[in-house]
Length: 118
Figure (cartoon, helix red, strand yellow):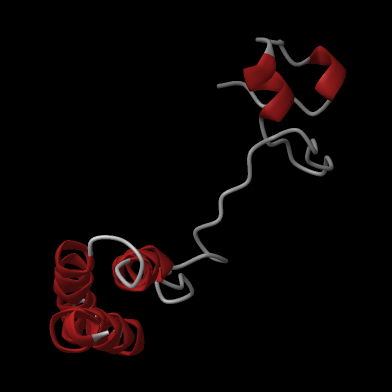
């Protein structure tokens, strides 16, 4: 390839010529930059919030079912809340899982042992 010392005399080929590096000429701001030196695998932070949302989602749904079971279908919704509480605990959301399990169990126990005598 011939060396062109004057940029005006260099042949143009559209965007390729616009973004091509020439000696002693400031680079064009519209060209793509390479991030290999600045952005490496060591600098990349892994974001695990998606799993945390899924874990807490099971806990919140189990807790909601357990609370609703105090008013409607105590055995069915209480059992569903207990099951989702165990699923939530297995996925790492221990506090929500424990609360859902306790609320579901209390709802079932109140229904079976206290409400028949009231």
